Image (cartoon, rainbow, N blue to C red; front, side, top):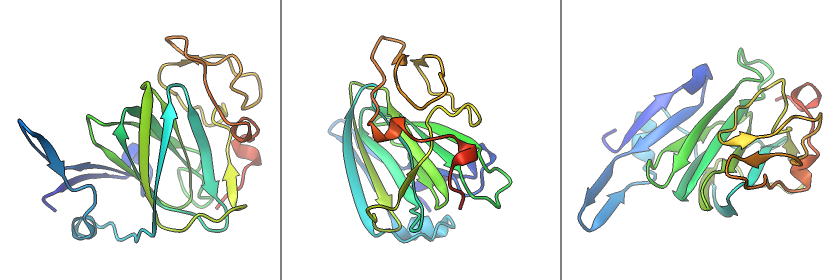
Amino acid sequence: MGQIKVEKNVGGIEGLCVIEPAVHGDARGYFMETYNQKDMEEAGLNMVFVQDNQSCSTKGVLRGLHFQKEFPQGKLVRVVKGSVFDVAVDLRSNSETYGKWFGVELTEENKKQFYIPQGFAHGFLVLSELAEFCYKCTDFYHPGDEGGLAWNDPEIGIKWPQLVGEYKGTASGEGYALEDGTALNLSDKDQKWVGLKDTFKF
């Protein structure tokens, strides 16, 4: 397990892992293994990935909180450019930490990865001018199977860094902005999700 350092059950939530790869750098730049199945298995992580995705987002974009209902996906996420605050919310109905959240800043500098197993809602807020976000999935994307959770549900109480605004009873981004004045930017769909008490459980 020489190429990765794994912190398991982060935030006291079973299954969530923060992974730090070994980075080999010199005056020319750096090299690292972004994924090594053997190292992961030695760390007790035996998931199998079937799909890689990548997205690009501008500052103030918040994507989430998303999950797949019938075909839940485990996700190994990282940032290759910029910085995001990445969040997972436990939606496993039999979990002692149901409804609890954990967040971690993922940046091109810290090169951390965040593993979110099946049964969680996931989302992130872009803190840099631009962010390129990559993730591996344990199941294929199934159109029509997506569910969502309000990113600002007070019952969950996610503390999004640099974000200011007042909750007005919906997931609308109106009135929210980063501290530098950048308006919060959400898709129409992400402004219509409801809170935890009305949301799907695994």
